[in-house]
Length: 185
Image (cartoon, rainbow, N blue to C red):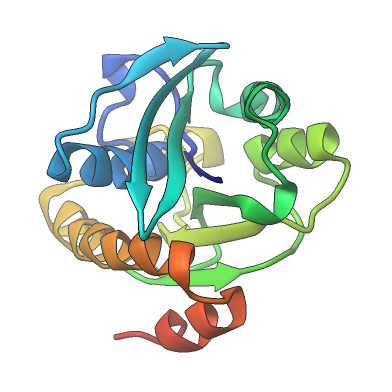
């Protein structure tokens, strides 16, 4: 069983904000496959089977800074191994419209990732980091700000690529997944 988690903040006021790009990726996959979200353990989740493997898509419904609390509940309830988790999140250190797949790393100041590391007691979990670039405005205002039309166009291209990454995450080794997609233009 695999757990694919998109990070974001609950509430309509956060739709299309930079911090919610993880939610956008998960929603894209769920919507394209006509899956239905259910509510459990402070999260919205949808289930499907990809290449004969059960996959759960999760959108934690605590604020992003408490995502790890919800993820740990799902790990325990569904008995999921940390090696079978993929976290999708925004990254200010990557250029807008780019992404990087990693199997471990630090939080780089991302409070949602800090909370995940605290709850999982490791920083060795698989992730897709989606670039939102940096800006000179206040960090909190920036990540909670909405994408403009040009930015949204670039992000939507990445979201479409992540659909294939999710499909391949289930069937490829993680090393092969990174080799296939890192550096993708």
